[in-house]
Length: 214
Figure 1 (cartoon, helix red, strand yellow):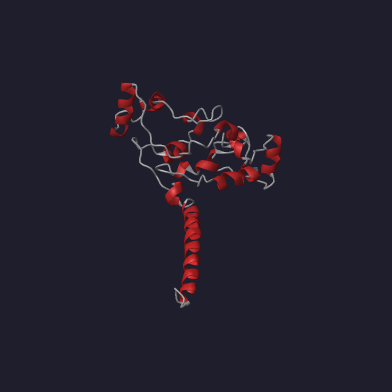
Figure 2 (cartoon, one colour):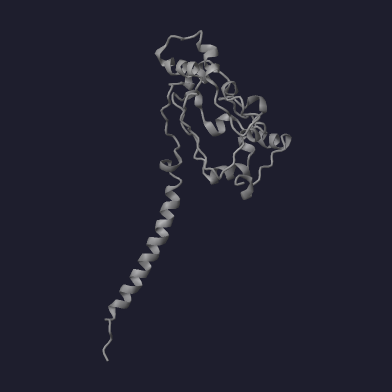
């Protein structure tokens, strides 16, 4: 009895199976890589805000400490967004009639917070505590970059799990004296300083899943 399929169909089947395997694993690999690109992480993408707050002027020219506005960073999981009244602590006297401050005045008079657009957004299943990092010597610039050079704040780092875990495995190079936490220009004089600070501040971040996924 003649064969139901010609001999070359065996090679065709083998090629089809190989193709499907390559497509499946290649597609999975593509998705894993794509998840790490700026199109997904949002890194380096300045976001428009309801008020044109220029960090270059406030954090750069006027050298306002990050913690003046983000005053919860050392004692809370969240860094905090300043109330409108804090903005007007200066701007009720300075540039108080500027059209750029119209939204600030409306917010103050209506007793309604300004609807800022979040720049750093973590998934709900990720736990991050600002105070645990800031009080152990991780500077603002480590995660937020040189905001003193940003007209519109953008995400400066990828915030991928690998990026976080790499720091947890070797935090020394990212550490600085607590008095320099908000400095945009501080540099370690000695490469070993960070590791000495890790010992002094008892820095021992976990790398198990429960550290960030609770």
